[in-house]
Image: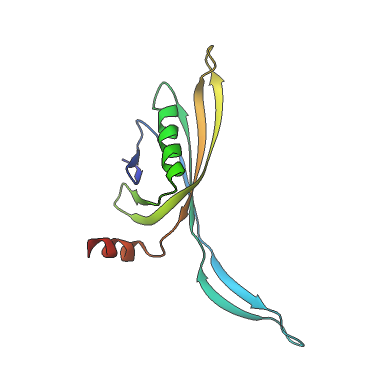
Length: 136
C-alpha cells in the first residue's frame, strides 16, 4: 500500500501514483496607511494542497474503475483521512479535482493509457488534534 484516502487504496497493482506534490502557504494581510508603508499582520497557515499524478495502463491495473471510485468519492463532498503507507497521517482532505488524459486507444475506443492528476485540499489544521478528537 502506497497511501489511503478514506477507504480508497493507492497501490502498485491498482492505482499507483508517480508523483506527490505538496503545497503549503501562509497568509499575511496588508493594510495601507497614509504617509508610511503598509502594516502587515500574519494570519496563519493557508489551506494545504496535495496533487497526486500518475499513469494507469488497462493491462496492468484497474484504470477506469479506480478513477470512477475516486469520482464517486468526490461527488459526496466528504472529507477523507489521507494516510501514507509509512503510517504518516497528512490529515483530512477533500477531492477538489480529477483531471484525466486518455491515449493509446484500442479499436473499440477505450484507452489503453490513462494519465491522471488528483487535487486534494486539506480541511483540518492539525491531523493529531482531529484523531485525538475522534478517540475521545
